[in-house]
Length: 369
Image 1 (cartoon, rainbow, N blue to C red):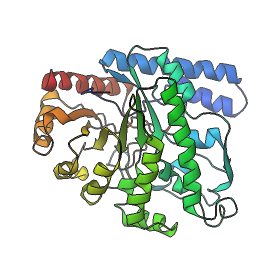
Image 2 (image 1 turned 180 degrees about the vertical axis):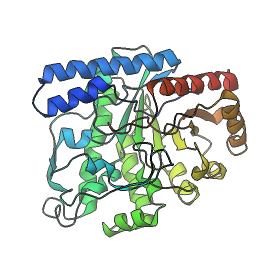
Image 3 (image 1 turned 30 degrees about the vertical axis):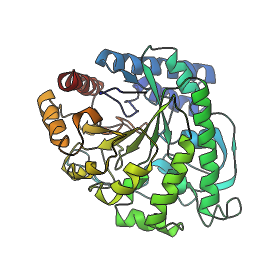
Image 4 (image 1 turned 90 degrees about the vertical axis):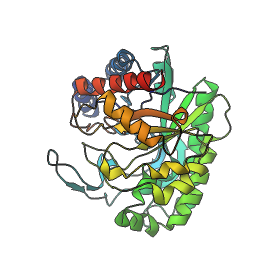
């Protein structure tokens, strides 16, 4: 099982070469082979950065993805029209450097046909990354109920009369993905589940409730689907990432985990809880009292939204504060979220990114040895 004290959530800033190649490829100006070579180089750079920082856990930086959740619509038939706004809609909040931003939900967004997998979502990512490092490779997958965003009563009813039926098929595809990853030797898989903290926001909760599920059902049926995806794999460690939105250094919601913690922390069959605690809007550490004795709380104390450089001393102090609720032996340290949950990326440099990851590793060594 994964026991690392220094962890990473997933995405890293995309290199300019990759962003430009993605545009050229979409416009037909680059062959698939040429584009894949650019992706490969970006993955190798991402792994190299994490290794230089000293991380025992690495990802491929999600270099092959448009967004942390986009591989579903890229690999599976049945989804209708979509563009970047499918992943970016909402009322985004930011500090003075980036400001506020509102993106409307596309009216044409919605599953329109029965889901059929054309290819695996993440196998290419895992196999390529594993061949480029001797560190443990983490693979990130979306929580199935997050895709409720892509079900519409108006557009989807012929294919899926209810949200439940749609999400059952999504969960089946993700369960099969986990099974194949486990068969290929994956040791560490993460489910990304930002939609649960989004339920803390009244407007977002109202949107989800209009789809037919109230808050109680999201916290029961949603977790049931997550556990179905996780399945029973004794050789695989699972983490569960709960953030509050992360695009272009902005966020969607603020607030404590307390209204959700009792149901989610104990209900999810993951060994590691990846929790966002990088600033005051995250609330205090009180909800950690809900973390069961058989789980590790990986605290996202290092922000990925700004270039502010945390110190080992301040991170150690916050870990000691958190240990009032969870013993140090069941804590670990990570960034608060990805550095680029879509190709948009956050407002900091690659040098800032590497500094933050190295500081996480050095703090973990200082605290736990």
